[in-house]
Length: 315
Length: 190
Figure 1 (cartoon, rainbow over the protein chains, first blue to last red):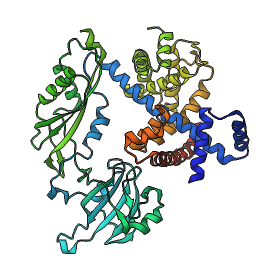
Figure 2 (cartoon, one colour):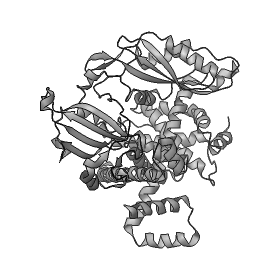
Figure 3 (cartoon, rainbow over the protein chains, first blue to last red):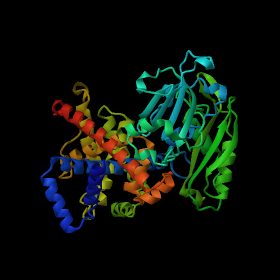
């Protein structure tokens, strides 16, 4: 891996144009003689441009909203993305509910924290005496299971039954090497095999992150959907007088089982007047449709970004 | 706002403002697409592709406006849409757009190159938000690794580097896979 990492860095420097003249010509000679190196450089070029596209697509989409709806109204931007993120990990499950969370759902590759330990028991083993302990270390960055164990014995991930219920899930690393091996080594630096060998000596330093929502949880929703919410906000947000600020206020709130809004919190502030107005209008929203877990209404937190546009200042 | 002013906005990094202005050309594209078996949403997606392509050209220092930006965007969209229609069921295609319009000279090469980049974009977005965030900070906003590590909560520079590498490797793997399957279907399109 060290070699490949080095190659990638070289490719980046080559593409950035930061190589010295002689290093550059040496690199080009090397490239001419190696199909593999040419592939690395070409792929890297495409991926860098691809990254630019990802970024530009976001600004193009944002600009479309401004173009379409004008920017003298506060508008809800990127709600699908931000709201999606807002929901993840914020479902408030009571401990009893936690027993019904399914392993398969917890393994959603993107939804979870970066590294996750999932402990589960088989669906039929209701009594604690007969509990089988499943344990998995998951890298949710792209859904790699490092280690799975059953009653302490290492197994392949596939041998953990789909219906196994999670009894505990901990985020062991807020991204970064928060898992340390007993001898103080950085777990990330170890190979999978090494991790497997040392599993018993792993000490968890991370904070328990609670139980994550399974994907059989539906999102809470404004009655009438996003368009209705957009309209509601348009009609109810008052222009902020004498303000030249433009930008986003992000508000986060709890939707309880009955759809009531409470515990409105400011996640990103713009100015006192904007913040106040955002909180006011969110607090004044009609009842929502609560999120549902396994068909039952539940409590969820929701995040909504409100964008205040430039033209407010003209008014 | 005139074309040179829009170009200047892009060069100052004010993409949002420039794009908002350029959307004024969308209705023309919408009309073309809807008259040729497409929807409004098709038109919007494609127009965004055209904006991205224009942005890439505009960023080049030696780029000079040779035609109106609107003409360029329309012409890119027309070519993209024709290719898209070819990809779909041929029998259903209705295509009555004049082909004599002034395409930029390099449009074929431009779009071919761009479709490779588009695959890369797909490969990257399939990785998920965490990887995208690391890569965005590294390649777009060009933050130093130390700072990336700090703001994303990595233990240190090394950890951030490893993450970035893992994300890139995975993206490259997926990109290659997509590339292979894209090339495999190419002869049928031609």
